[in-house]
Length: 461
Ligand SMILES: [Zn+2]
Picture 1 (cartoon, rainbow, N blue to C red):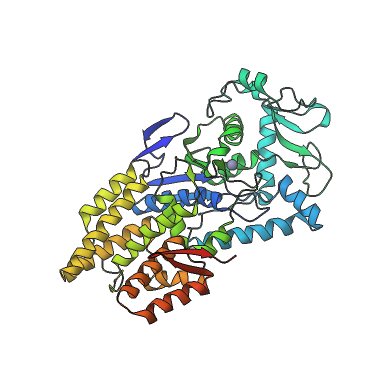
Picture 2: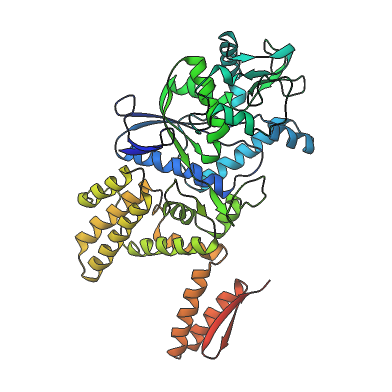
C-alpha cells in the first residue's frame, strides 16, 4: 500500500505501527453553522480510506473530533442570546444528520473538546513545566516556537520567513508574533479553572490532547483538509512532540479543497453550498461519485455540469444492475477484478481508476444480459455491489435510485434525456407521450420551445 505523506512530499510504503491495525485521527468540524459540500469532500475522503482499509482486512481505530467551544461558537451564541452549548449542540446534530444522509461511517470515537478539559490543561502544564510554553504577567499561555527548532517542517516554512513575512498584529504579550495561544485567560463564560486562572483552550491544543488520549503518543495517520496544514497541524506537531517526546503521526494526509469559481469554498468567503441544499438536488451517491472521479489530492471545481456528468456515470452503473435479483449473501465474486480494484486503490487511493473498473464490470454485465448468461450476471452484479460498497456507492435499490429525481429538482442531463425521448416519440407520431413529457417538465418549471426542428428549454423563474 502506498500513501502520499505530506510531511515528506513522497508516496511512501504504508506500514502501520501495529500489524493489522490502523490508528487514524482526523480533524473534525467546528460546530457553529451548517456543513457545506467542501466539508463533505474532506470527510468523505477519509470515509473512503476507512472503508478500503477495512475491506482489505485492517482493524481501523478512526478518531474524529468535534470542536464544541471556539470563538465562532461563542460569537454566534452572543448574537442569538443563547448559551454557547445551545449553538454547538444544534449544529453537531445538524452535522450528524448531514453525514448520515451521505451514508458516512461513524468514527470509532468522536471526542468533544468540552469533555476533555483535564487532558487539555494537563498537556499545557507539561509544556509549561518543560519550558515550551510561557505566560507573561498572568496573560494568556503561549507556545514558544523558538524552543522547537523543527517548527515549520510540515508546511516547509522556516522560522525566519515566518518572522519577517508576518503581518500578524504585534501582540506585546507574545515573545514572537508566531507564538500561538494554548490557553486564553478569561472570566467570561464559557470558562474552566486552571492554574493560570479561568479561561478556555486555544484551538490547536485539543487535537494534541485528544489524539494522545485515544491513539497514544504515536499513531499512524493524521488527516484533515489541506487548509489545516498551516498553522493548525504545524502547531499540533509542535505541541505533541514537545509534550510527549514522541514521533506523533507517522503519515500526514491532506485533502485538497473544493473550489468554486476558482476560489476555495468557505464560510468566510460566503461562496458555499450547504450539504442540505445539494442533497435536495442530488442523490447522496451522486455527490460521492463526483468526488471519487477526482483524486483526493487534486482540487475540484464545483459546478452543476460536472455533477451532472458524474450523475450520468452513476446512472449507467445502476442501469447495469437494474432488474437483477442481487443476493448479497451470494459470495462468489470475480476475484480477478477484485484484485485489480485493490491494486489501484492501494496506489494512494486512485479512485478515478477504481470507478473505471466498476464501469468495466457494468459493460460486462450488459453483455452478459444480452447473451442471457445468468450465472455470469449474478457474479458480475455481486462484484460491482461489493466493490461499490467500498466506495460508498451502489448501495441503494436501483429502482429507488432512479425514482430519486422525482422528488428533487431535475438535473440538466435528465432534462436533455427527456427532450430526446420526446423527440423520438414525436418522430414516431406518439403525440400523447410527447405531450406527457412536456407536462412532466412543466411540473418542474421547465418550458420547451420547438423552433426550426430544434427543441430548447428554459427554466421559469
Ligand atoms: Zn486538529
